[in-house]
Length: 69
Image (tube, rainbow, N blue to C red; front, side, top):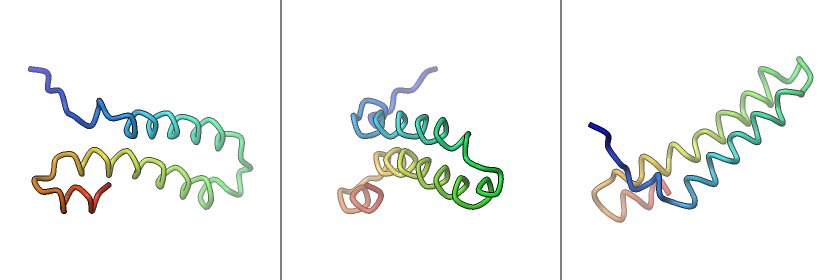
């Protein structure tokens, strides 16, 4: 059974996914000495944007949702 989640219809979530792709494309060409510093931090932070939007959409109250958004 396929589930449809409301966050997948969100413009903000879809834009964050595009941003994630762009960050990965840009950072692939960073120098090796940045792979475990700046590249890692950029990638983790951009992934957390879409993750927080998805997690916030599953919260029961507006206050809980706002915390994640």
